[in-house]
Image (cartoon, rainbow, N blue to C red; front, top):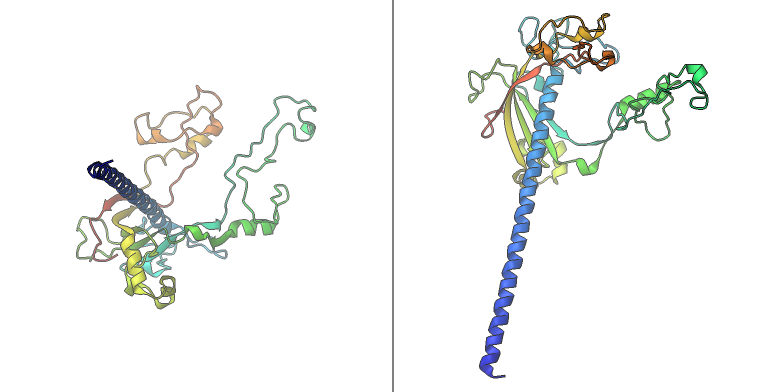
Length: 346
């Protein structure tokens, strides 16, 4: 083979190798882009989950969470008291129940890092435990029929409580230790779930320089910051107390790198004492008249949104519009405003 021909073959081989290298690099770059896009989707999904968690937190803290074992009667009356429109939350006596600093107007934001625990309080098994009733009174089918007349009396509790190892649920003879263990749960964090997402809540005073005058009554609006990342909700390094800096290696550079890698979003939400239109018909399903009685609201009113009460629906022809007593004790969120960037106070 001549030298010229050998050179031509070498050029062709080099060209093919260059094409393969280009394709490989393009493929790797595309894979990296796909991974980055997937990471962004995960971050945004976690932020949306934190938005819902934060709004539920605001709702529940408006009226729930103040009772103790020794005083079960305490319950507040909303961020804006529904009795007189004053600043809340207040208890029955009219005393402010701002048990934590963030609940006061302009107080420090409440950080809420989110993670899984090994066994949540009052956890139940995510399975169905049917209590079948035999169709016939045949001892061969149900030997104990003569004792309980075919009624299982919740022999299989549904839902079934989750108990720690060593404790067994005994429906007909519950033990106080079982109840206490079930209510307490196991609050040890699941390590793989930590450092993934968080939210923080700031209660607006109405004097914030960038707060619109039409935002809503002061005390009822909140800045809800949601994040997907490992800063656990600290605004910046200066906000991290000395006692918490060890989780960042006592190094501001580590915190700043985590801050740069996470996604943050800011929202303004307004709490309202309104509870919707399906609350007016709760008694319908409990009426002695099992046919449901008259339709007070008509099919095209808010009352018609009540779900059918399945426990009273014996025939398809019966007019059962009563709901299952689904009252709303924590108010609603009037609006959700996505902010373009961090507000002056959050």
